[in-house]
Length: 409
Image (cartoon, rainbow, N blue to C red; front, top):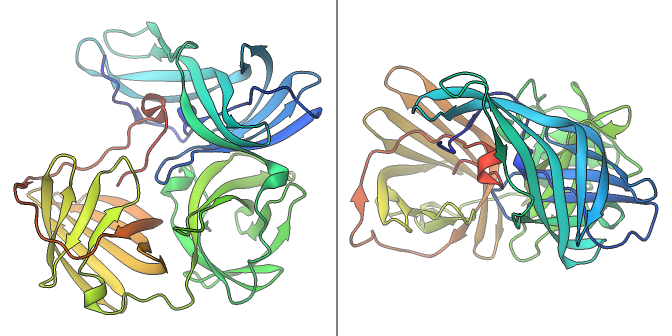
């Protein structure tokens, strides 16, 4: 059966859930943040472990669940009740799309490096899939296995999270989301640039709105949005590239109702491309799984180049008011992507990127503004043996099959 899976509900990234650590507890309660360590990958949550009762409260993109755990070898085996669940479509054994329900309730984690306070963990998730329609209706098959090695995630004791004393007047942060979820996932919401009029407020530059902010006992910066309080917690920074990893959560009764990962960067005060010569470069996307570059030439032509497959998509580009427009034309649609500069760290250029695909039948596919990093590879020339081809619209596969969910490049 095909592993292609298109998420139908906003239940969230089931497979991006990481839960636990393997070393003996040094305190009755361990409050730990988990997040994918690579740019472009989804996945983040917080877990409050009670090592006396061997119970835990896990909060991830899908919501909050209570569970109990046992120590199995070098891992904690956590079982949550009720399971995390979502519905979607896969191809059944007859080759037709069928509606399925996926449930995940077993999580196994062992420390891969570091210690219980900070390091990396190997996580494995186990559940089951039930076919609701099609020729396999009524059948159930396992998802994952407890014998699998799992994948790598970072973990950090909440008390060790980097501080936010630098978020003060004169500083700008690119990445917070202002909009309500309204059934969407966090990665689908537009990211924003914010500034800090003082220690008690946050100003969203696109909307022009200013909201009160406060500090939660667990370290969250809580912003009082119209949809309710939303917490932002910085969990990792990279001094070389400027990359910052944050967790985001809507707060209910002072506690996270869900948690998701977001990538951010401290924006320059007045970012600029430095003219057309600063744009006509070779730019490699920072997401390691994308294998993609934009090669932009001085005559305002270029290609989107997939270097692993030696595959190109022709494009044109232009620069106006510090905003780059990248246009790709295909038989069935046109893609118009924008880059607005945010920050420059050595060879690493951060942009606010959005993309709209307009199809010949009038339909659209939209990537909301998002914070993305490209590496400047210098001037270049077209690949010697590349082939142009028509591209199909991207589809985001379900995290359950990706094991660590990725964003659409």
